[in-house]
Length: 85
Image 1 (cartoon, rainbow, N blue to C red):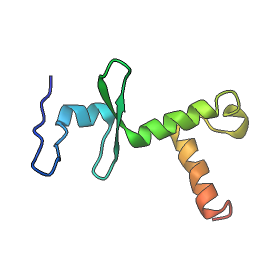
Image 2 (image 1 turned 90 degrees about the horizontal axis):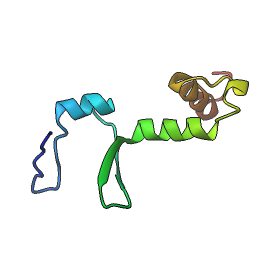
Image 3 (image 1 turned 90 degrees about the vertical axis):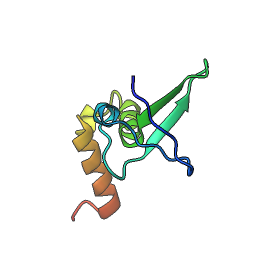
């Protein structure tokens, strides 16, 4: 069990064990999700977005050469900066 104290500004420090488990780094965003039973779950928002993208590509990912997070990032970079850069 890990505890974190809420500051007067509503800020918390995520314990190191949790940062490691979620692969959180400085500047990352976290996602809070409330389950139907009221439980709150915290996720690495960047990782969550990648997993959603991978699921959206399910069945066609291999056809377009997307096999892992690195391939997704490469595809995003191509769209942002053009294929020839």
